[in-house]
Amino acid sequence: MSPDGAFPSVSGTPWPGISYFCSTREGGVSEGPWSSMNVGLHTGDRLSHVQANRHVLRRFLPGEPVWLNQVHGCEVLDADQSLMDLSPGSPSVVPTADASITMQRGRVLAIMTADCLPVVLASTDGRALGVAHAGWRGLAAGILEQTLAALHQRHQSAASWRAWIGPAIGPRHFEVGADVYAAFVDHDDQARRFFAKAVSGEKWLADLPSLARHRLERAGVDSIELSGHCTYSRPDLFYSYRRETETGRLVTLAWLDAQSSQ
Image 1 (tube, rainbow, N blue to C red):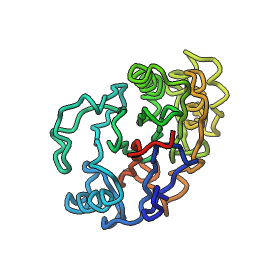
Image 2 (cartoon, one colour; image 1 turned 90 degrees about the vertical axis):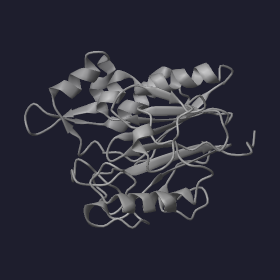
Image 3 (cartoon, rainbow, N blue to C red; image 1 turned 90 degrees about the horizontal axis):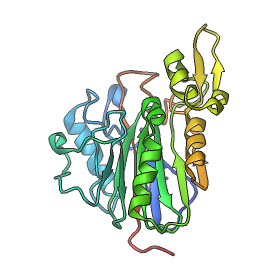
Image 4 (cartoon, one colour; image 1 turned 180 degrees about the vertical axis):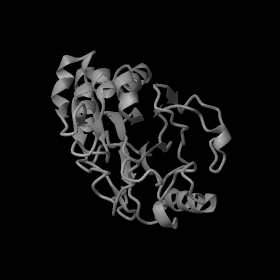
C-alpha cells in the first residue's frame, strides 16, 4: 500500500525519511485493456481518463510528480536543477530521461513501467533520492550506475545506499534472444547465471530483477530489496506489455519526507 495505506499499491521495507510505492492497476477510471489506473499518456487510452487517474493519484502525494519522457536511455535528470514546467497534461515540456534525482523534500519523482524495472535508490540517511526506469537496454547500458553516480555527486558525504526493485516481468516469462544475452554476458561473465536456456532453441529466460541486484551490488549499494512481484503473471494487479501490447502503465513514486527521522 501507499505510505498512508489508502491507495492500492505495493511497497517495500519502510525507509527512514523516504516514502515510496508502485501503483497497481486498481483504483482508477480507465476501461478496457487500460482498466483501471492507467497513468500513461501515450498508451491509446482516453486522455480524460489518464488525467482523471493522475488527479486521483495526486491526492496521495505531497506535490506534483516529476514525469519523464522515458526512452530506454541513460539520461539522469537532476529534478532540483530543472526549471521546466512539469504541469500535468503537458507532454511537450516533459524532460526526456530515464531516471531522476532530488535532495528537495516533498519533490515527488516518478517512473512509469509495464514490465521494465522501476528502481528506487536512496542514501540510508534519508537525504538523497533517485528513481530509475530499467528495461534490459537501459540496464545493460548502465542506467542504474549513472543514477547512483549522480546521487553521489549531489550527496558526497553519504555513508551508504539502499535500493528497492519494484514489480517487473519475472524470470519465468522474460524470454530474450542472443542480442540481450550478449549485451550482458559479453561485458560481465558473472551475468551468465541470470540466464536460463529456454526450450524454444536460441532463446534464454532472463532474470531481470536479479541482474539489477547484481549490478547494484557491484556499484556499492549496501541494501537491496526485490519486490518479488511479476507483472506478467498477475493481470489482476499489474499491466504487462509482454502479455498485452495494448495496455496501461504503472507508476513508481518516491519522495523525501518533510521531516526526516535521522
